Image (cartoon, rainbow, N blue to C red):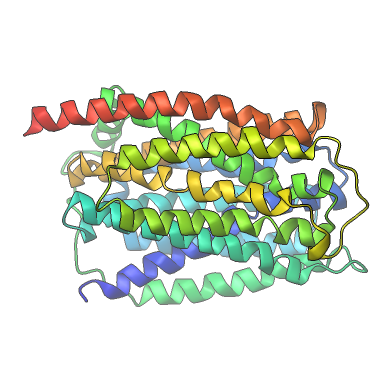
Length: 409
């Protein structure tokens, strides 16, 4: 199969960063327990991760093709390798901030490179959507494994034992680096002959396009929902459902597995069903889950749970929401990128990364604040608001895409 080597490298690198990025919920819980910080203070880790992603993407996305996508990904792996080692030897709340800062910087290079290369490696909107959904689904597999990899290093007799996971992750990053280093790229990006300043200005001009405006709103709202739930689910499991440290993290894997399955299914379904139909239906079902399932936690009182058989039913059911919110992000990314020429994919991906990062930070901060001030039982109800606005935004996005297609036909 043509370009098989680089496709495998893209999957593996995205998989590694899935573990690193979405360990933030686990690390927040560990920081609260081990470094004696409040929920609100711990939530800044999401900001160190997401704001660094946004900041770096803003300045590098437009000229990344000139650097080279392969070289950019190698730089990213090199940076985050040392971030893991710093976390292992630092062992302070300050070290966690540096860790997620390096993860954010590195992921900005990775995501812009991966998303831009999808456009080079596919030949139709349907193929683009399928590849996008499958690679995002594999990303969720990495997230799911994180919920088992981290607890494997937990030791109740040694609160520092969990740091050993960063030596393991550093080794995994080294393997990814070597795999990518020896992968061949048989396609080349269309490199602009403009200056870096002109490329940057061209990216900024994209923001005012109606197509991009409604996409940015949609991506921002979706990531606010997804990251808000994903980041705080381990803490919800512990503080509300009374699961012990290991179970609170492992049970959050149901959400990641649901997200993975949802995105992989969407990759097949989008070939036959409209992306808008899939997205709106999924959001409505997700809202029903929030409205119907979450009230079951009110008045729930239990001692610390150490066995899976004792976990309340809601601990298994609520994370299934991931199955329904999963398809939205890769689908809206794909339809927008497919509507634009390949030469704009790097700049557009930069905007995707920037506003996704801002949405993730805001979602995590709001849920962290609500957890601290109104309790975990009520915090997730907030998500119904952005879900409602997201439906309206998707309808407007679809209308704008159709106008864009007519103009360019």
